[in-house]
Length: 418
Image (cartoon, rainbow, N blue to C red; front, top):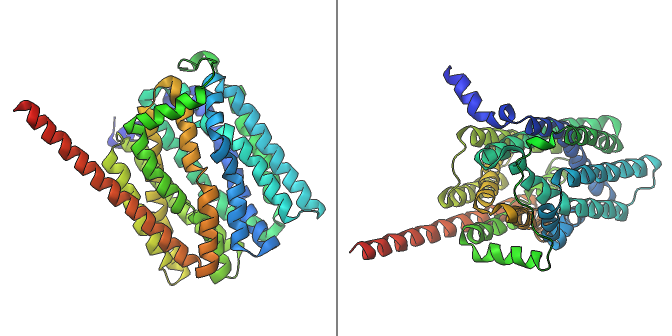
């Protein structure tokens, strides 16, 4: 086998080895493209209806508030029930929300409070969908290939961002914002079809959690008492709350400095997506075992580039910096996800990934309004810099803590040997 063939084999081993994952991957390839149409359209719609960065942050917060409040409950459901069946229902509900938004815009009756309400409804679906989908990868490919599957799924998610965000900006400019929601609603048929076509006999299901009281409390206690889970989650909480909400700042930056042109918004998101795609493919190929040093190092590097983005004086330079920003952000997110997946017991994985969802998505109701307020009060560039410095601090403190713990273990070992 040639070197190129070997690299391709490592990179795409989950796709070639699992028919079920292959179906899920290509179904999501279509569906997630529509999701990026939706995300771009919502930002444009909220700014047109309000002209406010705070409103943009509030809408993003409402989208993820249910994950913060009810995400752990979604993890209990994922541990107890058939994940594939749950996902069919969640994808169907996502489609219904998108099509309802399309109808309201088309009829001319859309108002800001309606956008808020639909974002909140989608958030309730996400509270169940996210932990179910994240813990579903092990069912599809097993623990041996889960990092590769997560990386490939992330590559797909971000690759479609490049296409979806750029096309969405042009589509909205040419045909209006309603068209993006219609396309999003229709694309959910692809992932629903892929779920229904899977072979149940090929699933690698672990044991399901027993139906007993206190399952949620047990999951929280398990995470808090397991240092391999607790310490990464603390770093993730800081980074996801203070730094990953740059998605709120991108449309605000477009509005403040580039005339609110949806094509600029689409291309800024697309360049970030290019970097994310590259990061996901590199992680899929190398599939490195997640370590504490790698997690905290990615956090610090991501924060540094985020701050640099806020200092860019021209649009071409902003486009350019978005690429490493996306690369490092994706590398951090994949390392975080893999760390928790591999450190979890099978019967706890749904609840652990639900708590990851609370940190990853549920932190947005806190971070998005903060980012929106900073961007509106001091300017979007200041929001990038402040968020970047927070991530740098989390990464450097985490690295220092890790080194102290490693030194303490070496001293303890030396004492035992002596």
